[in-house]
Length: 263
Image (cartoon, rainbow, N blue to C red; front, side, top):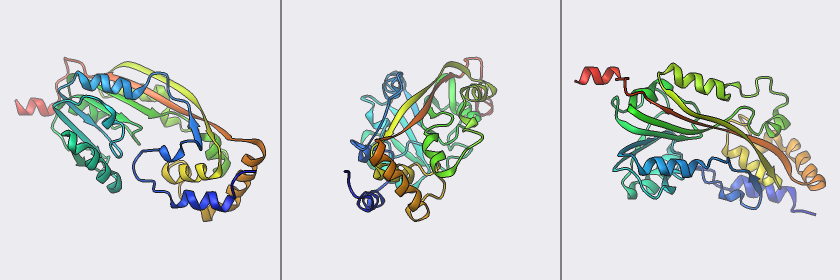
């Protein structure tokens, strides 16, 4: 028999959920990693760049894993608790951390960066990415794909007819091309995910707030207890995350409007 429902839920409710460090879930939930290894790809691109921008850096957790950062590296973040974490983590490495609302326009001049990266952006503003990239520059991102962890979402919210269509790879590619970028790589994978106790579910839904909007333990307590009993009886709750890798390049022939004005 596992731990008591109330104990697990109280522990998860008390856990801090700032930043994008999911280590609290170690031993309590698992998720397969995409085969392409985003952090490794990002680090390789950063090592060869002179100027780079990380959009929606969270607490700076992923950017900080790169062994080498370009001489000019900037990170943006819009949520104040994450902003403080990012500044504490990244500024000692020479990164400029900028508060940004995650809405256009980005607070930078055109053609400012050789490389723009972003892991799990809430939305991709393609026109702005194209504007701040230098000709020949690259955008590299790992995003949330369609219907990610929807087995869990639908357990609490019921059937979801759209199944996250905005995250589909074809739309991602179309958005990049509409902004004048050349798609170099576009891949999607579905990844097995398991929640081993109800505390892991509570923590995940508190942290990834868009999965079940307005989630609170009080609002979903009866459903949480049912899921707890199910996990106790049948083992881990299984779902499937989806991830999209996109790499796009700004053609050398493209010169932004701001560059034309500046020179």
